[in-house]
Amino acid sequence: MSGDATVPKAASPPAIFGVHPSIAVTLALIAPIIFTMAAYPDTFSLSWNEGRGGFIFAMAFIAAELIGIRQPVSKAKVAVVLALAAATIAYFAALPFGLRQSIQDAAPLYNVELELSWVWMWDFIVMALFIGASLAVLFGRRWYKIAPAGAIYLAGSAVILALDAFFPYDTLGPLQVIVPVYLQIDQAVINFIDANITNVGPANPDNPVPPASARGNLLVLNGLKGPFALQVFWPSAGVHSMIIYTLVMLAFLLKMEMPLKRKMIYFVIGTFGTVAVNVVRIISLSLYALVVTTKVSEWEAFHSVAGEIMFLPWLAIYIGIVMYAEGKRMRRLKQASPSAA
Image (cartoon, rainbow, N blue to C red; front, side):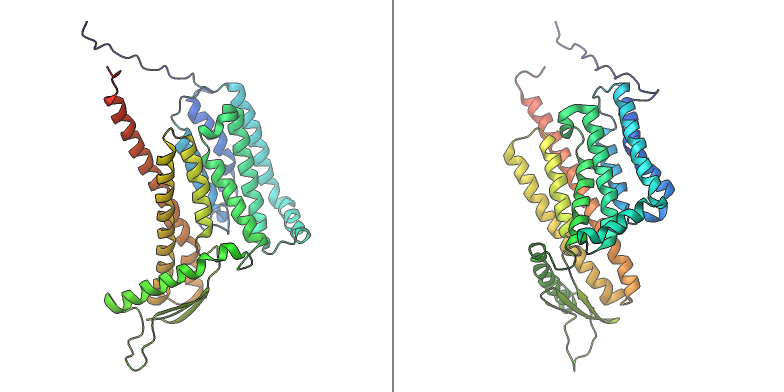
């Protein structure tokens, strides 16, 4: 006997409504997001606290985790999820017909400081509840082992919006602590670039003013386009990205089969990577004011998208690297196993 027996492939799960069950489930879960994109396209900005742009990234997380899985799902469960999706769509459809105004009117009752963040917060709460409840219906109590990232990303975004609504600017001291550290790093890097790489400040030997000067949460820039002053608060320092990274990465590592030590190593490396991305973001914002423009409207437009443009691709790339490294490690272990054919 040669031992070269052909291993039979696992049978594909039966189709649901004529499509692969993973695709059917994914479409059911993202249906409310598709509806909001069609009904309110102008609300999908990339700024974390100015619209529903986070829904796009949640949709990407959901699709990445669910498309292609072979978890059996019944038509009855998918029908329940479609009913939940219809209820969620009804919530979004009702917003312009008085529901949004009712949410807005309730803000003073809860001593909300930033009304806009309060309003967006409820959209993310509703979507997080819908995704979490739907996954529980589909996969039972251990749904968080299968596809937790989308629900946790939405819940994390809701938490950040709640913090911004109730504790804006520098009112939440513990989250503000990191800001002076970031600004001191920014000051050192900008002044190093100006002294050793290229001129980003006014070339005036009679009045040598450094292009960047930081004190506390204040940053004063004096560049090629003129002076520019910033007062930096915790959301702009990337604290929200660190919270979202922590929630998503913990959920991702929780469902992966690997030793606890390796999980901790991956988490710590990713933490330092997220800090580095936040520092690069602040430096890029400073350089934009120093070299490109000091017009507030143009700078704000760049500021509103710079965080998500840098952080979310970094998070996706890092998770991809972890998955690749662990997949390669598992294949190597299987090949080295004595029981391997």
